[in-house]
Structures are given as C-alpha cells and as structure tokens.
Image (tube, rainbow, N blue to C red; front, top):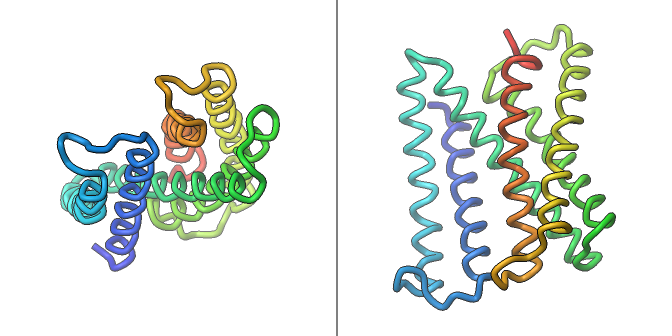
Length: 204
C-alpha cells in the first residue's frame, strides 16, 4: 500500500464517523444500545478509521490477484470522500443562507454535487483506476460530462423527492432528514457512476 492509500483511508473513515455521530446526535436519542452519545462518538472516531484502513489493506492483498477488488475499494473510498464533500458544502450553504426546500434546495444540492463530482473525477482517474495518461482527454472529459450529467439528475432528483415529496418521517428534524436524503441519493448515484466510470470513462 502507498502512503496516499493510508491517508485517504483514515480520512474517509474519520469523515464517516463524524457523519454518523452527527446523525445520532441530531436524532435526539440519549443513548444508543445503552451507550451514551458522547461515548459512542469516541468509539466511532477511533474504530471507523481503523476498520477502513484494515478493509483497504485486505482489498490490496486480494487485488494482487484480482485487480477489480482493489479498484472497487478505492472507488468506494473515493465515493465516500466525495459524499462527505457533498454533505459538507450542502450544510455550509444551509448555514450561510438558511435551511431551504423546493427549488432553492435543488439548486444547493446541485452545487454541492457538482463540486463533489469534480473531486471524484480526479480521485477515480488517478487513484482508483490509475489512468494517468493524458491522451484522449477531450473524449474522456466528454464521456465524463455525460455520465456525470445523468448522475446529477439522478442524485438531485432522488434527494429532492425524499425532501419535498416524502418529507421528514418519524419526527426526524428537517436538517437531519436533508442529510439522510443526500446520503440515500449518493448511494443511488454511486451505482450509476461506478458503472459509467468503470466501463465507459476510464475503460482501458
């Protein structure tokens, strides 16, 4: 494993830990499985980076014989980092402009998604699929744009549907529900993007 692999694994694991901690804390629950929220946070902050690094190491070992496994793991971590960027920018926009629904929410979600997608492009190209050559960049960017544009529609559409049509359920606060919608949209978009990037954009 390279140093970049270790750093990105730890960062993504820590980022997911903070995400889960925020969702748990925002739910208003005093305890989770008999464990206080604060203690649960420390467990997440310590265990998630370790588990992420261990999983990437296992995929690295398997990837020596089956390259797809290592690529899939890196693709997943790149997607995790992009999702964290997506959620981070979305929440910054809400913090600066205030919580929003309807068209304003769709615009905010589109902005956060596009920035995250740009980061995901470089991560997938140079890290996950290790396609460092710059030949045929015009065609690659065109393919990337088309795949990303479709992914944008899927991502924003799913998130907007959950926020505006379904609406907060089970007494979940709006801000937490917004993050849940963005997370679910990211999973759906992840499936589409993996197929498009792997078999179209970064195909070798």
